[in-house]
Length: 558
Image (cartoon, rainbow, N blue to C red; front, side, top):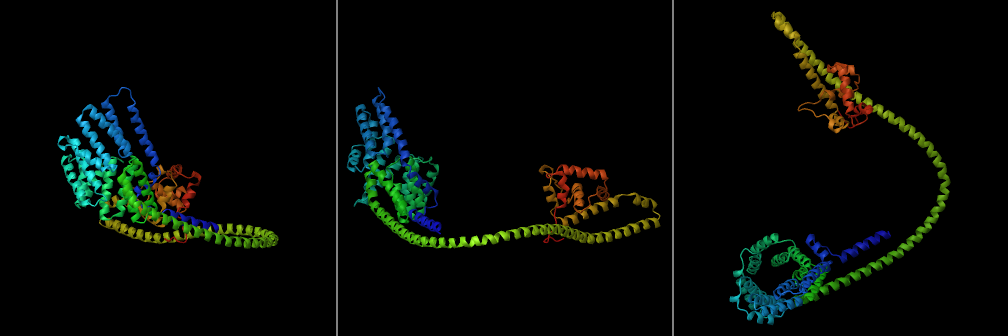
């Protein structure tokens, strides 16, 4: 009783603490990875440390330092924005000292991208305003228009002039599309965003799904594509697909140690809307940690809008669980009192039973002796019954075989008498017509004998297999696998099987078998010996095993 109560309490507690997890394995993978974010951060830190060591190389040139700083910028950009800004500024100074226009534009645009992520919009506008787009080469023109697009897109959030800035972002997006290679993934991602804004959702989904299928495993690009695809499903109101693709994007972000991300926050919102408070809280908490770590001000602000709502629901859920747990504890306490009373009652009953057992022990000793005598008698009766049963079974089988064969024998006798009459009539006709040559030819021919023997064996095979339909399979089961008989098409039994069929019917004498099959006794003996040598059972027991094939029971009819 106590174990059952504890089991139900445990199941109830687990079900309240861990709500149903969606069947999609993507979510399961994400929840597991969230517990090991530090592992991927450690890999990121190791890569950064290796790159920083390169700065300590004696005698490196300013150009080499610029390239190393760019590597550090790439590592830090979505990891720690302040550090990325530091290295971008260093590169701007280096580019100015080298008087390299390409590097000056490049470092300036990289700095603008970081300013936008960090929410430093004034600095972004000033830096972009100092650049002339007409002087920028192809790749930098892409970065220029992309920076403007991102700036106005970020700035349109929670802004009274949202529509104005959104339109500006879309205009720069069109400019970006005009300079991008139409076959590039970057172009397709930006174009899918345009299709999304124009509510051409099916086209956008198809394009993004193709990109997702082509994306390399768990890259940042895959995270971006999955996030965009999830946003389309959010427009369509498909919560299950939102969870799947937001989770896929978040998995890529975790594996690449990307702290400036939006997928985890979006996933938390969907989980909250579908009532999965525990998981929503875990996701929004993880998202807040990432935003603070990266110093991504816009992300921090966005998360701060929803975090209190989810946190409140989570705390309410925790309070409810505590209340339920308290009720469970009270119930357990009450049940424990009943259990103590029951144990005391059982203890008194056990003492009473012990006294009765002592009284019964003496009686049992006497009964055991009587039981031993009865068991010996029962064993003897059982042995006799088994012997009688075996005899009855043998008699029943013999009677059924006899009944079956008597009927077939009468039919065969009648048939052969008719055939003899016809054959006699044919001989008399030849003799009366004086066709002596034909008469001698008929008397010397074995055609009729061979035909009748063939028909006799076919009748025998058919009748025998009617009595024992599984004879061939059971007989083969007594042989080694490689030695089993495989019958030809339309062949019921071959010579060896026919010999052992006769043995199964009780004809064990080789001479009688030889007379029936028109072989010599030595040939029959050789066949029997050869088949016994192929047996999977001991040779001495082989024919006894054959005799047990298809033993007739009460359910079998002929």
